[in-house]
Length: 84
Image 1 (cartoon, rainbow, N blue to C red):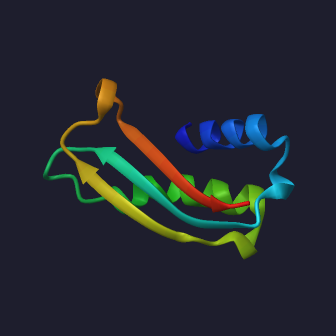
Image 2: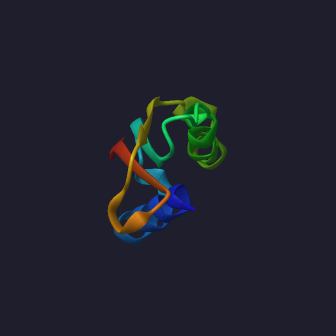
């Protein structure tokens, strides 16, 4: 859902996805217990959506980071850095 929201914001600001030259990096923050070790698997959903919408050429760098808590008690936060 977080990655879908990023695409909604991109469409609102740019009008379409064709103006994206490159996805440079996405950061995925996951609120998780210290025993949870599948952080990267959770982040795969966001990465996969970027590739599915923009194509294989848009593979990107990614960080998957486990945190104790996120603002508003959200379970996941995704940040995207793109070149337009």
